Length: 187
Image (cartoon, rainbow, N blue to C red; front, side, top):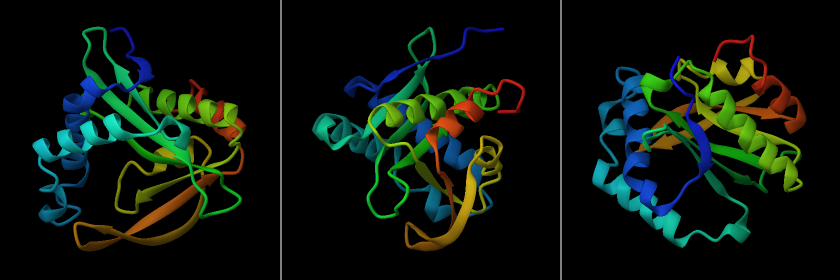
């Protein structure tokens, strides 16, 4: 079995790989489920610029952080963006992004990224978290398998296409960390 990717904080030099980590899984997951215009924007160049801006301008004091999963060869193959959220009590934090390249999915990497994000949030005094995922996403059951509870559905605007998003929550990140570390459940 190949060595599992390591998880670390993202750095500015990761922007190129991060563009692939967002674009490739979106195309693989959503082609045929959403209109093509959702998948055509941003371009890779725009995504790289967006990540460079985010990584270059973000203020760590805001509490947001971006974790990446990196292979032994230095390739970023997954990411998790998380941080505080203030709009939906009693949830103090949100997992904003979780993406993994298709070739690295179903290997437990998503669980590891979510667990690491949850542990970091808990250490920062945010013991609960939510996540929003498109309802047409065939992988959304992943969150249920690691203990998330369905809260509701809400509209999501993806390039001027209104889609349904499912909101899931973990009232306790301690529960999430335990579920995410369960080696018997499928990734």
